[in-house]
Length: 133
Image (tube, rainbow, N blue to C red; front, side, top):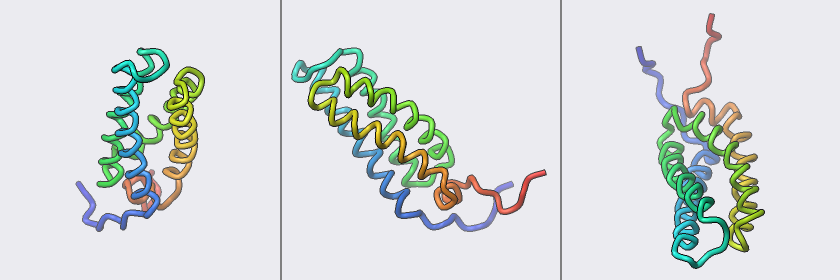
């Protein structure tokens, strides 16, 4: 049975990470497309991984914005995994990859930490008002 309690107001930080996730997804797709078109440096295989993360970023942006329950855990997992991709971009991605890798690595640390705070957890329906037995 679903609770009839109103959904908490969207925290400003969640709105910011929704925009960051969607923008990061678009920039990832753009950067990978440039590499696949021969206008970038780095391994082609890395470009395909970046495409996957670009699509995930767009989906997470939408999920964060709407407060979808799945977006909370998916965001934590995907952003932690993205730290490894960010490091690979720094090492192998040329100048564009360097900047994207730095941003991705910082986001991979900051966003999961923020999502664990009580406000975002409540917005995504992850805080219970009473302890479970």
